[in-house]
Amino acid sequence: MRTQTVRFQYLGFLALNLFFAAGCGGDGASSGSSGIESSTTVSTLPPAEVTYPYKNTKLICDALNSSSDLTDLGMRQGLLAKLFYLNDSQPRFGSVNPYIEQGQPLQDFTLYFSRLNIPTRPWDRGFVTTTGNVITNQQGTTLYEWFGLEFQTDLRLSGNEPAGYYQLAVLSDDGATVHRRNADDSLGTLIIDNDGSHPTRLGCASTPILLDGISNFPITLRYYQGPRFHIALVLMKRPWLSPNFNPQDVECGQMGNDRFFDSTQNPPVATANYHGLEARGFASLTSENYGLPVGFLNACNLPAPILSLVQVIDVLSDSAKVSWTTDVASTSQVEVTNVGTGEVVQVPMDLRLMNDHTVNVSGLLPNTLYRLVAISMSDSGKTTRSDVLTIRTRR
Image (cartoon, rainbow, N blue to C red; front, side, top):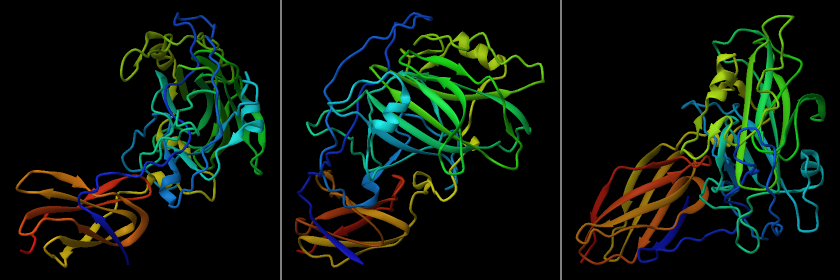
């Protein structure tokens, strides 16, 4: 069991300097079919050299503001991603492969996504760890363009979908490609080519994939964000209805940052063009359709911890000690409320992941009534608070 000692008066929290965040997305002319992309040149630096001592400071979940459509996700669900960025000396590439093959990998960080359903939107959140730290460059500014992501996932049917052949399509801003993934993780057959710098554009597969409900279909999706300000990435599918099926939908190849979604709304609202895709059988893949490659478990899907044996011990005139256990390794924190004044302070979070927790809260006033709440956060960023414990310090 580890003990954390903190003073009640201390309100600060260590802000780790990471690497990335804020407004992004290839910004084209807002008219529906224009392919003109405005370009912005920015100076980028490698990630700051900072030591990240604890596992959950390096975990990034659903970084592009995508979110699951399920409440109970298994550890084998999702997409595994790697993030790449360009340094100052590199050209601003206009296709995805150089970002992945020549870009600088973001070392030691793990990214998981529950699904790819990011409608056209301004993007100013950036890449944020589960502990709330925004990844920034060495100058402390966010990097919102000129990065690449490589996703690996195994496509599968959800419980109520029929086995058969399906057409894949991807809406992206900027470029994206989808390949079948070989057993050695190398790129196999190209399925969708929606590459290049452009506003939101629909790229469609010209050949079907087989989803038989028994085996999974492994893919690698490569995506890059060139010049800012919008971002979009939606992976879609529809049944391949017959041998004479025409895969060339009227929207395939069409582009525009207001063609498929109204990004001025929050959240973005689908347009008539997008609803037309739905009427012709297309649908965004659900969280159930994504499975992780063999050997990976999605830490972002860990449930919130369960707290037990929460108790206050060693109550003195100026301090008190709170202890508890959690069913999964989690962080430690205590919220302290002075009942008389109403002042509420959350002592700094101990980022060490453990099952046995002890927090020593010091700097309390004698003969004073306090309410204490134990707080723990699992590696996934999900938090649980204990019931309120009321104490009076000694005289």
